[in-house]
Image (cartoon, rainbow, N blue to C red):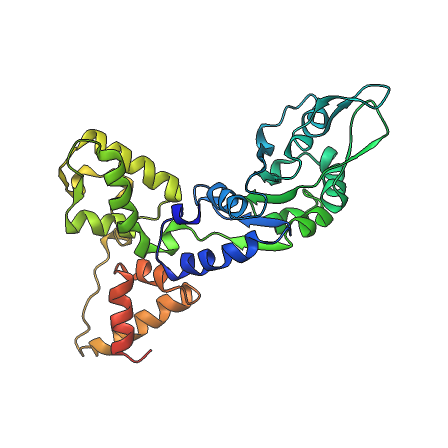
Length: 307
């Protein structure tokens, strides 16, 4: 499953190198990242690389839990004699992995019970005081700032710390710009079918490299599918992209005017690179996007200035 996570940027490669080690543990994992970055794919990779791979992987979308009886859905129900008459989803995961997706949406009314489940594997089913013990591994994912929610009281702080024994932060696609062209080619081939693969000229490539991709990899996949359907085998020009994918023009079409005394171009370039790196907190992919150049070009110019 790890091989299904595509990318060769330093940010992603570091993450992929750690996944096999994390998978061998039974420690709880909290995966955080923007929507569309592939958090569920990482959760699946952790399960299928673990010793539990032959047991169930039960995915619970906390944002879609039934409002009327969440405890029944999660934990299940017993009759008066203690016999299980309805196996909740946590019991159904015995020996395997439970993946709480969108865990920030877990209602506070059941967070205490979920915390107890995480700590001791205990499930108290409706209709009986008998405790069921379940052996599962817990993985959770959130696109929200769970630390901020915990600090503000919208999410139990003890549950947050119990979930994030091993934290994983998935980088946004805009922060690994060197993966964009590789992903475009991969999914372009996937959706081409019997048609020729969609291509992009240099100007269109520049637009796609500097676009922020707010929907991340999921948005890129949908984009590739749309291009394969509408423009099979064609070399895409910038005017065939959606308007929001066009590079932003400087405010008020600002033009930089050369002062009468002239400038030292090399020093201006150096200053701009340093400012971009500072604004991007050292992230070279983000700095390159701020400067409207590729990461490789930025690295070349950094070398030139001995940065």
